[in-house]
Image (cartoon, rainbow, N blue to C red):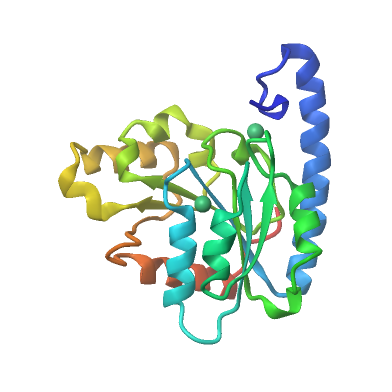
Length: 231
Ligand code: MG
Ligand code: ZN
């Protein structure tokens, strides 16, 4: 676990945490200015390990059609497996290995962006470390926060991990092709999401059947046309 998410010594870590978060915010702001200058819409993709973050990025790239250029920053503790997956379909991708750190921060993104051909990108996806806790605390200089929740995770997760859902601009319910095989009450799940965040659109998607992927792409394009104001 990381000190940043508050699991260290209580009072001492609180001051450190505030400084870290303040510094992070400053870096994130200047990243957003850089991305705006380059007319790039950047998207923080968050969700548990195995919620389908990389699959969503793959399908988005594949179904988006001609003329859209993507860059991806991949955050994982170890390995470059996701980076290789994306490279194999021709995506500009950079891997960040965080070692023991369970989230990405603006400094890591800043370093990765230096290696990105910004003039050749319209959309930058930043796939965060699989985790529903501290990624929500760290602004990465992105324009929108997207949280994935797979139907296999159960109805209660929005209530148990409210902060990340609260800060989401878009919530994607993933792996919906599996619903017939699960003991899941979808209505309760949606109600729980809405209890935490009534504003964010919720889209049901499946990377297998491609259900909802076009809706997600349309929403993404609308964010690019009508950018969210700077934080
Ligand atoms: Mg992944
Ligand atoms: Zn963390």
